Length: 266
Picture 1: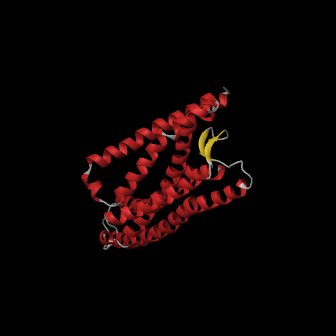
Picture 2: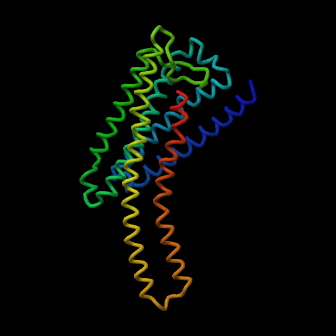
Picture 3: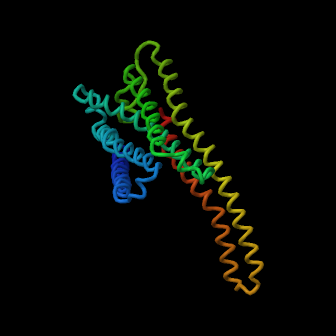
């Protein structure tokens, strides 16, 4: 086995361990905090956590085995059924995760833009309906790929995933399927996140400006305030303006970093 395979296997093993630990911590917080369970967005977070956990215990261990055995186990007849299942879950869980993050961004947009009517607009049944769509959307594409025999072991990824069929004309059909799949999952989720968080950022900056005006008026009235206190208020003012931008950039940036390589390579 090549040194690069050993390095990739070690990295993948570390990712599996971190994924299991972090997502189990999220589940523990969900179980032990009744306030979190009362909120509708908790269902999106719970669904995303389960998707991550299933990915960590289904496809990722098989990918690790593929690296260590050069794919012999997955290519063999004995691992056919298991490989088909793992490839189906790979497409289903990845698509479901993308759409769930888009649903979270829409929920945050409603919460910020319509704060007074948020609880009447987003209820648990609304969250369940949104999750129902993400499941149906993901299942349709996963079932279509399995039905066309586009799920199996691919040596380039050392894993069981969606790959092009060898049948005549399969390449064109597979290309169309891939474009539609990622256009209605990755691209749709990315556009939804960018649009909703841009609106959230505008609202946040508007409120920050109002707070800044009140702060400056207060500082002007307090003529006897110590310079250090005045400077501290101005520093907090600056940090407040940057905080929302950093949070939104981190959320969207994480989505792009995690899913773009997966989508582009496929």
